[in-house]
Length: 374
Image (cartoon, rainbow, N blue to C red; front, side):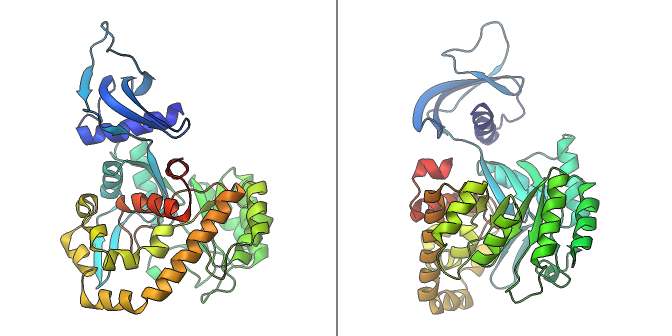
């Protein structure tokens, strides 16, 4: 819990303009602790950039800055474990390519202290991550898969951004081993044999996962169906991302995922929030949403074409959302570790803001607010 609380305070202090302080006394906070499921009034002492305790007064023998947060909440640092950190995209060709360093600041403003970019321009994101770790990029911590490992002409190749392809177990082992030299934080692998685009087969998936494991790096598998998930469990993948909509999750599969320790990154925001962005005016009226993007991009969600699209698919969207939320509840009840990830960068998402929508949707699925924060 020490690391979690540390991240929480750094997120809060960035809003106070004191994020660079290494010695700090935060007075009159309300600490939100999902581990104990309590909210308690507390002061927080930070020495050399780390939590040192919760004393009633700052130490008399050390000069440090004092910040009175006047009863504001100090929450755990949030994380977005599926994003594409170039910026935002919306209806009507709305496109806001601000770049990862700006997105890292936006995330921190929203209380998100770390994010996992699961496909970007490889050399660019690698350079930005390395510069941050040398102290050159201020903002939420950048983690990245660097590339997206997929079949020739498979998903990820359609965006005009160079990615890595593999079409056999031998190619998978070579591609993974080569990319491992750049120390990706995870490997992202696209596995969707029944999808509309070409996909690697199960043997290639198995080779990629086993090679990643040999290099000590976890794997996140993009899936389309529950059979894809079952195959990913069988070959020992670390996590899957997205909620299949070919039916509810089989309870036996949920139990197997839990027993094998496979995590799930549902990306509820990207899968369910477009209609809410368009048809519920309160969503994008949020001050946080308006801070996180441009008026031009927000206007795309108010356009006649976006409204027609959302209205035409309203019933289908509601049914889709109900199915997705029910599967997440089944997975959580089975003991599967659910991780927050938004797939931000796509329609129906905003970098930073959508992690809060993701938490709301987890609660709508039946998780308690404490479970969603955890």
